[in-house]
Length: 213
Length: 345
Image (cartoon, rainbow over all chains, first blue to last red; front, top):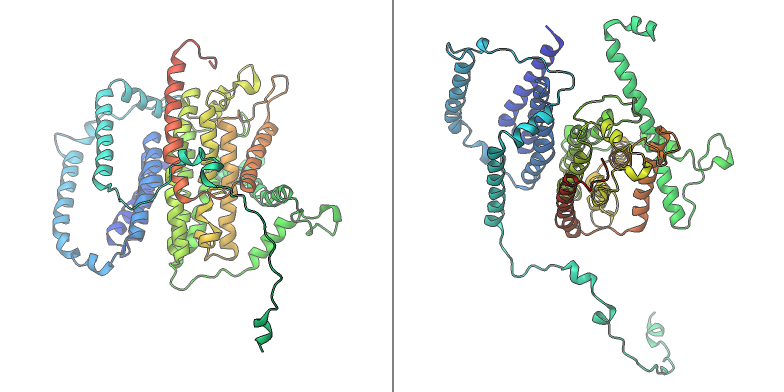
């Protein structure tokens, strides 16, 4: 067994274990942390395929940003664990059907007679100077430029829609306008009043102190 | 060297890499220790007081203060690590490790010299961004696992802040990428080698991005004036309020290691790495040390100068100022590079 194969099996085991724990962990925070582990391990598998751009982007985007926000929300929610577990067995059957269908489809692709995996030619070894990132960038901005741009516009619309749907302007919210704050001059805020100082009368003897025992 | 490699046999590459990792991590730890002393001395000087000046080596008086970091470390090592009842024990102990790990792992691709780099990988810049983005997990997990309201508030603030500033930081690095046509950190430094010394470094054409990156770096490391995650005055010490002893010290190590990392990245991306600022002096590692030292001094200077930002001010600065500035400058740089009037070929 070559070193790479050993690494692949180690990563695959960790990935399957982490994915299983995502759905079986009782605590939602633990489940999301196992999801992080699954992402990192999947990135490791992609790295083994020499897809370094995809692997690192997976970590950067999903682990570094998406899962942080996910944890943020999960931690803030007041989740009743028992209530979540209630429907577990009910959902298990449809989930097994979906998983079984996916497994069957993949099996068909990998071992089916017409789509045999062995029939595919092995990818040629890449030269030392081959840059996965540069190659991907070139394809995205030349050959697939329309697909790429349309996908990004759809995402942008989705972002705007998500904000527009959830934003509500509260009438009583207070905010500051920094532009107005910096142009403020002393005269706008403080009015200096000239007052004549007057002599206070001689202080009376502190009666209260003497009265105190 | 030959006899060593024979002695270890097939495990030699592993041993050799481990030796190189130790050769990088140990000096960093030393730098972290003395950065804490430098911080106290520099801020003391700015506030017209002496700073630590008592603990010395072997009773030599004029070394006063120099042994302070070692004394601090010994004190923290001997203290008890208290685990709060109701805390999630495994995650509570894992959090400091998770915050120190990215701060050290990112050093693998930092070039100290044209040859001196542990892993000269092609996607070095992406690797650094991915690894440093994982640093926030230590803070979040610490805040949640402590089972304390102050710690939890600190971790939520930190999560929101780091995610916001990472975007501006990423855009600033896109500018560097456009200048160098490469994700490799060695190539990024080599591209800044013009005939003009300091004038051909990236910080001149990318000046707004340099400023954005520097300030985002301060925010990413949770340093003053962006230290709302710790916010002593309102949430005691934020995410690490429940930590004591060495577990607390590891958080501290991570914060300072991150400071050194961000300073080194700033020096490599914008200030020409190991390149000499004047053409008649040779390039070399000492220049990198000088640049990193300068950026670190800025960090300490900021802390001594600025009051802490309010949370909404931090969010406004990140989303409404830095991200538009970097986007506009990306357009400017992109357009300018297409014209014949681009001086940094």
